[in-house]
Image (cartoon, rainbow, N blue to C red; front, side):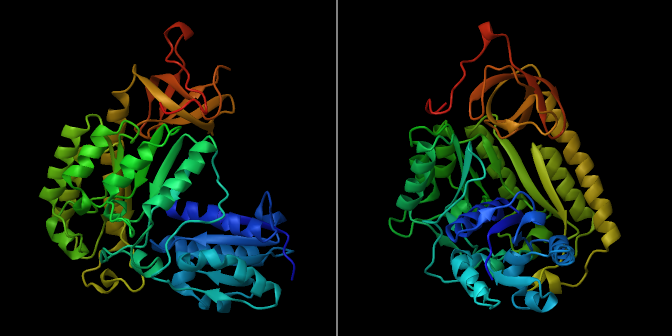
Length: 450
């Protein structure tokens, strides 16, 4: 079997999207070329997520749809569903040619060679000595680059499948991270996003450097305008890290900090190892040190045993903190996690009703916060054309808010430009370029940090 072209479909978080860049690099190194759509590809790779139940069903359904095409492609399953389901995916469908978990994605070339010999390989599991980095990567964006600094997780929250699908926490050497980031800056990328399931627990395995040290070193690299990072855990924030956020202008004034539940009783059942009071105290210290910081968060509704009073605690925390963006999910039991075996599972109708109420609150707050920006001028890094209109640009402000504005011909992809906010929705801002005589100087690609 000789494969000539590939197409990748990605579900899940930034880590999965970055894994797809790595998968693309491995496939190209093996001689495959990208196809425009799945219909024109010899190989379709499904890079999967199993953090919640619905994506697993979606992947299984997608396998069936691809297998029923008149000329079905070979299907490769990667990502967390691959690790979770393993060889059973081969049993479900003869169209699945290989299964490769996140811990073995760097062996994708071996899987392809085995496939060409008529085998159907399954590569899962983790090597504790393996750390991310040093790979062929095809970057999806010419303005922003993702860089893995921590893989896996040691937290073992009772609802979370990540320690089982991505393994235990493994930090990458600081020197390797800096080499990769310097390469991105030299290639003209303006922003890097550092990735890790619990990124602020980073500890260099060679020097012992902490995450604050890594942030300072990355922010000092010439050519970079912005540094972002996800995802942080409240219990791994210390005063030195907060001071670093305040002292480094290149570090984005955006922080994703999940609280998951506003109820201490539920937090204990989740094994979050932090309390509501500790979370609120951290938010206060962050806002004192970094004025104007834009906060986003994750919330789970309907966790086993959650009563109406627990849910009201979560709503009250939303009102008190006032997040710019909220990612909320109804609890779904995941294989191998303790919470899947908990009693007092919340009915699906109750979960949906609570999720709806939570989004009503979070969207109202996001809209109120965004409307406060109308009339201000925001420095926007242009990512590409807006999905709403090819005559518009889309970019993000330094605080990670999405902003769309009409093209003027004075700017280009990768520039950082001043845009005046003229309207706001709950999830994006609308802007226009000010008169040139009052315009902030355009920071052209390759002109250095903002």
